[in-house]
Image (cartoon, rainbow, N blue to C red):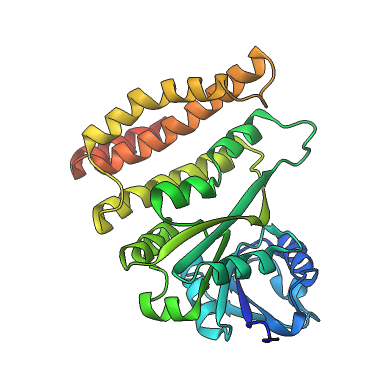
Length: 307
């Protein structure tokens, strides 16, 4: 029987040592053989102490770098890793015990796959009492099946690829604030590799619990969307597109919520709908200010700061 391939798990971290420790606990409990697993953590200038979470763990390597962004951290980890299979997750994710086994088996069952995207389950702090902001994050979170089927990528909270594919396509675009996983997935797809969704490779990701945190994430993603459209031709940019989103998204949000059986009661539906609309407006405003000609965009940002 052939020995299992060495799997390198890539984890960037910044100011999240506590969650990193839980992630490493979950990786230590994998069904995959420990001798065929290495974990490479890159600390992107944390103010807390991720070394404490890594200390004493067999097969875990910690690399430190001055703050350079999550994508540069992933690239540093890739350079230091040795595995023929590359698995990406985040410090705040909890991989299921069979996560690596399911992801590797999916790669092996699809020889033309350049990327396998596993399922990301958004988990509220108290699943029995999900707040409106948590429901919004669940709706706006990681729909990996849709990412694969419509956009040909997987969010790096849960992806698998091979070193052969990475060496052919290159590493992540570290200049992107957000969306480097989308750009890399599109790069693989355009090069002729398939992108596969694997529902059995599961990680859980905590929902955000405050509107400021969710709004900050939304703005960052929107800035990344604009850069991807302008620089790489992925998605669309421009005033017509942004204005169209403002008109269409509220209607789509209302229809989507009305059909979802998990949201009970009109009052809760209204709160979640207003929260989703709030996030849509953050996206729209961010994309609008970036799409405007420079003098108008500068005036919009100054007016926004003055509020």
